[in-house]
Structure formats: C-alpha cells, structure tokens
Amino acid sequence: MKKIYIFIITVGVLSIMALSCKKILDQKAVDSFNEESVFLDISLTSAYLSNCYKMVAGGAVNTIGWNRRQIGNCTDQLLSMNGQASMPFTRGLLSPDYMGHFDDVNNWFSQTNWTKLYSNIKNVNVFLANVDKVPAKTSADNDLLQRMKGEAYFIRAYGYTQLLRCFGGVVLVDIPYALNQDFLAVRRSSLKETRDFILADIDKAISLLPEKNAVETGRASSGAAASLKSRLLLFCASKLVNGGYEASNSLVSFTDGTQIERWQAARDAAKIIMDGTYGTYALAGTTSDPPSPLTAAGVKAYSDNYFNIFNQKGKWNDESIWGILYNDQPSGGTKMNQELGPNGWHCWGNDSPTETAVRKFENADGTPFKWDAYNPGNQVLRRFTASELVADPNRNPYNGREPRFYATILYHGAYWQPRPSDVILQDPTGTVQTGHFYNDDGTLLKYGLDTRQSSVEPQNGTKTGYCLKKGEDPAVAGQFFYNSNAYIEFRYAEVLLNYAEACIELGGSDMQNGINALNLVRNRAGLPDRVTTDQSRARDWVRHERYIEFYAEISQEWYDIRRWMTVPESMQNVYGMNIKQFKNGNMEWLYNLSTIVDIRTWNPINIWLPISRTEMNKAPELQQNPGYN
Image (cartoon, rainbow, N blue to C red; front, side, top):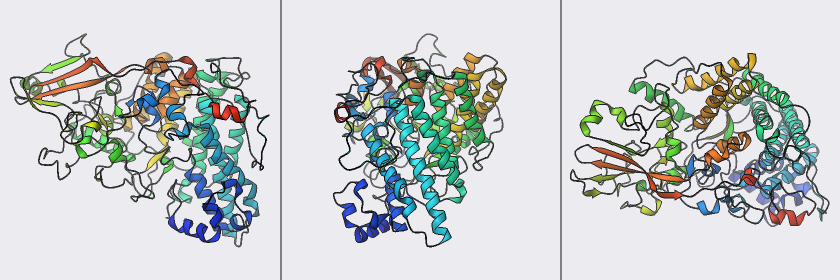
C-alpha cells in the first residue's frame, strides 16, 4: 500500500507544481492560485490538498506531531528546557498583546493559533469551491475526487475544532475570501453555531470517506472523522462550556439544551466507533486481565507493547486511527531523538517530565505509588543503604512501577541506547545518568553525563531529573539521524476513554459500561480492573487514566484540565529531583524544594485563549474573549 507523508509535499509533486504553475511556489497566496493550472488537473489538485494536510494544524513543522515545547509544558506534565518565559499561560500573563508560544511568530503552538488555523481553512475553502470543476477522465478519477472532498471537509473540521477548543465560538467561513475582503463587520458565531457547523462538516466527511484499510496510510478515513466528532462532543459536554465559565455568554458556553444531552451525544459518538461502524479498531496487545503479580518479564512485555504504538513505521496497527507518517529524511522526518533525548547523547533534553508527573504513575500491581511508603509523611527524601535496596528493590522509587512508566520516562539508571563514540568510554552501560556519583565518604566522584554539570553538553541537561522516552526511537542516533516513527493523533484508546468518561458522567446504568471501557485500557497496560459504584471515585479514575495513557501525547492534558476547569491543580511550581549514587551502592533521592526550577502562576481568565491584538485590529467588530481588554 502506498503511503502519504502528511505535512510533506513530495519531491514529485513539487516538481509538477514547479513546471506547471511556477507562480504557485512564488509569492501568491494559496487563494490566488490560477484555477486553470490547478483545478483543471487532478494531479495538481491532489498536490494542493497535500499542502492543506501539511498545514492541518497551523503550518509549522510537526505542529501536531512529535514536537519539542509541546503544550504539555503548560501543564504539570512537562517542563521545556528552554523558552518557559515565552509560555505566558504558566505565568498568568497571557493577553492579546503577549501571546508567547501561542503567537504566529514563534510557531510552536500553531495548532492553537487563530491566524495559522484560519489560513488553512481559507485554503480548504478554495479547494471545496473548485474541486467539482476538476475533469475526471475515469471512474477512478471521480472516486478520487469524492474522497479528496471528504478529506477537505475533515481538514476544515479539524481546524475549526481546534479553534473551538481554544477560543469558543469563532468566525464561520465556508467560501473563499474575495480580493480586498472587508473584515470590518466580521463577528464571531456562538459556541452552538460553531459546534453545529463542525458537525455538519464531519458528517459530510464521514459520508465521503472510506474506512482506514481502504486508504493510504496517513490519509483521513471515515474512522478519523468519527474520532474527531467524538473528541469535539466530549469537549462540548464538559464543565467549561456548560456554565463553568460565564454561563450566559454564548461565545464560551451553551445556553440551550442540557449538559446531560451533550454527555449522551459524546457517549454515542464514541460507541458507534466501538461498534465497528467505521472499520475495525482495537487496542494493541491483550485486554485480558493481567496476571498478578506481574513478573519483571511481564512488566517489560506490557511496556514494550505500549511503547511500540509510538514506534510504528510503515502500515499502522489497528489501534491507530489517524496521524502523521514520517520518513527518515530531512524533507519528511522529525528529529525527536535529538529534541527529547538526554544531553549525554548530544541531545537537547526538551520537554522534561516533572516529579509531580512521575509520581502519578502507579505501582505494577495497580496501587497508587507513595513516595513516603517507607517513611510516612516525608515527601522529599528517600535514602537507603545497598543492603536495604537488595532486601527490597522497590525502595528505589523507579522499581516496581507500572509498565507505561518504563515506556514513557527516562530516569536515572534506565537503559536507553549505546552512547555516542566520543562518550561511550565514559559510560559503556548506555544507562541514563541524571544523578551524581559519590565516593563512600560523601565526596564527589563524578557528575552524571546527563546532568547540567555534564562533561558532554551541560546546557542541555535536564532540570527535573528526567527525560522523555515516549516518541523516541531507540534505533536512532539522535544527534545525527531523523526519526521515522509515526505520530498517532487519533487512536482507539482515546475513543474508549471518551466513552468511559461520558458514561461515568451520565451515571446510573451507564456507569458500569464506562468502567468496563476504562478497564480495557488498563488491562492492555498490564494493570488490574477498577471496581466501584461511586461516581466521584470513577470520575477521578478516568481522569487519572487519561493523564497517564496520553502522557506527553497530542497535548491532551492541556485541553482536559481546561474543560474540567482543574487548571489550578496543575499550575504548581516545578522542582528538580537530585540523586546521589555512592560507590558502595547506597542511594539518595532528594526532591529539592529549596530551588524552584520554574515558577508558575494561574490567571483564571487564561482558561480561554485571547484573540491577538493584531487580529482584533484587522476586524474590530470581533468580540474578545471574557476577561481580556
């Protein structure tokens, strides 16, 4: 099966465009394309749509894929190695005049950017206005054009879903702008109108798109469109837009219908995918009850299975619904090993996991991890002798943890990959060294190679004591080569947890169905079932499961804490983990509360993004989001 590399215009397509419509690649905007040269040739029409795929989340390289400085840095999950000062969301300073990484200059959070998203919506509108003019010489051409139309509706719906989740009700445009368009009277539609507009696009996409197995890997399918619908309706059922913030403001809250009806719609949107209506999807790995207790080999098997979801190359497994298929070339790859890997491998250590997040991963038996298990009340220090660690290896806080922990976090002592040739003599083991090494008398022996005192590249050392493993490829030497592992934007686990959350919120006879779906995800991860009849406890459990299952992935946590209105719980100062390893085998782990790595402050008005001053000046009748001037 052929593959489409989303976010990439292939060399062949570029060549065609360069020869047939040179002006397209020069200065003219996409909506100025010469229709005679683009929409009268099916190959160029396909190339145009490929460019819309490329810009699906704002046009920056890899903006919805594996990307350093992802929006997870605006939650308690991650800390960006650089650029925290440009994340005003965590400083309580986000405003129309100060957008930081949310603006259209830095281009880091382009999947949230008003200007970038509308730019591609404009492109899609041009496509949809002209696609029916494209000559179809064969029935296969006609089928292709209908499918591409479905893809265009999906791309536009994706862009508008991003706008809704960031801004609320937005300006709805479904035709190309005319030259010299007057924006003086442009106003935003209500949240309800925006949702209904998106749902209409999604339904059109579903009706025109085949199932995943009938399209090239990476193209939109009916399942992808249905998954987008599930994500949208879950957001629309949540507290934020159901009276949680300015209940009477129709731009940011629903003012008709009931929240129960919206939870039912979210439940049904997920269930129809689960029923196989849009193709066969399933979690990767077994969903049977895991053996108890898990052996070390069992933990590794579950961990490897989970890790490999994000290390896929070529055709995707049945859990993968839609995402980005990279290649290993500069034109279509991503250097996530270099971006995320430890500095002792000449990598940059971006998006470091926080200690707060590390402690949320459970124990291997499914019980909560407790830092103070051996010294009740002490949440800061663990110190044990070598003999104590031998007697109970779980005194090491990184032992005995759930499988997803080992697939997600690079911690002190974790094996990663062979060191580079100029470092391997200093460390032939290939294990992560985010701690310091000491003589038995407490004098310093050497600094860890992956610390900020490293002899390799200290400026890229982790500030938290951890690096991110998820999204990297152990077969790639990060400082030299490009990754080709896939990024999955929609996967079946999200559908199951969307369904679980909606059912739990509905309660009653629905709640056990939700817990059953939740347990499928847990069992696949090697964890035992949850059992409860208490709705509040079930709610906490499904939120926890989303936190871990989607950790550092698709920026899900940022959207979740906003729609749940739990941002204050996530907006805590970040501190580092200091580790000492002695020659005699003694160990010490100190959560260093004396030094704040990142100061964070929450401003409630930042729960909705502001429309930038530049955009407000273009269209002065636009209504700004509440709380902003």
